[in-house]
Image (cartoon, rainbow, N blue to C red; front, side, top):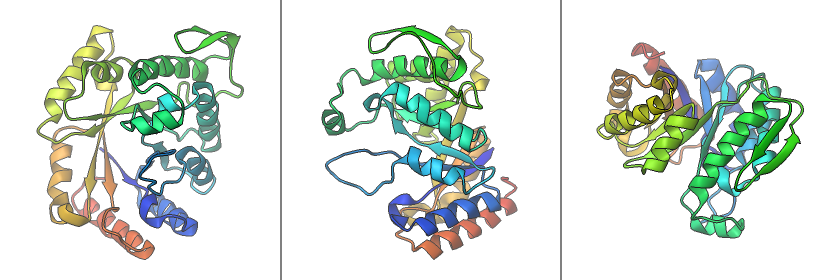
Length: 280
């Protein structure tokens, strides 16, 4: 099981040296990936850096840790521009990008971006198909409801062809989300409880098999908070997810209003405990 960590950008805010120090320490300690959330414009105005820009910056300051925006709200963004930006990050990082995508739940954000909230799922399906093509071929012909490309491509292509795309899924996802994960994605972020996971995972496997995919190729990643209300039970949650056979796990030090130094101290503490548990 690969164990990464969520970059606590909401709490470190504009302390860029602290963000860099956290990313570099995570890499040094052996965490496999960094996750960063997305938000463009919403009424609650929560502090978040734009993840693709931040990942490009961190690509130059790290060497091996995987960079994972999770998740980019894809339908409010221009597909071809995302393809170009993601390809550039993949090149700058030496093939270390894993792109988390989703359709989001903020109707206001769609309104601000002049996009249709009601068709976001259908549009996301089309976007994923186009992204795969743009990342894999020098010249693409594509005709859909939102995109029409007679013959064109991005240059340069990314190192990974295509760049892996992962999707978030909460408890009781609808069939459209199940199909999106099973037919188009390389993995899914498990945003449900351990009790809900098996039933959802079976549905995803069924969707994959119907289109001839091997379900074992679809990764799974859950998150575990190590501060706050769940601080004293995180070890059992890690062990539980490991027993369930997840391919990835994400540790979260955010949520406890820690200082930048406390985030670094907690990261070192958790790393040692994970090694003592033989988790990585």
